[in-house]
Length: 190
Image (cartoon, rainbow, N blue to C red; front, side, top):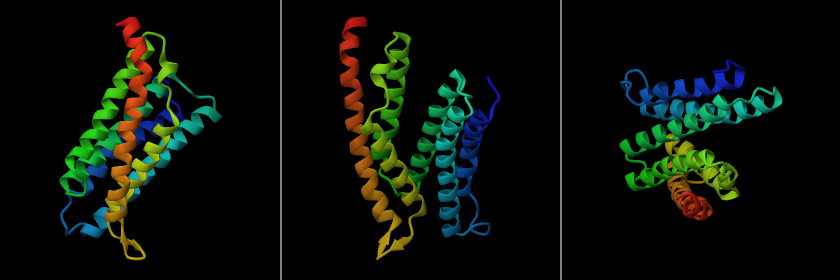
């Protein structure tokens, strides 16, 4: 495992997960519900920034590694899954939506691993719809974590709920896109 700044940032993102989840288990004597929402939102936002930053630094500093390429998406999926589970428990996201998003991540990760084993990883490279899905998903999670009034009578809960449904739709669309790309190879290597 190469020790470099990008990998350190990825590990930091993983270490943020228990802190992020733990915020919601603190007594109201420690943090008010508003403070819990605010601090969890800020931690999730920091994790999202480190996700972008570790990839950027790996390229700029020429510190890319096979381990970093493996660990980065794992850290992303763990953080998103933790956030969705917390949001389901808080009653801010329907369990079916969380299942769709988390289930797709597991299925596509397995598909990518299989494609890499048969030397066809380029066939499931990240698509444009996948990038839009990720953007909608991250924005939705941030808004749902914050939940409170934003502007013009709109709450984070209302806007986040709309966006999480968009993200779930894009999640299914991107999953079908990847499966369609992989189907001929599954028949060939089946």
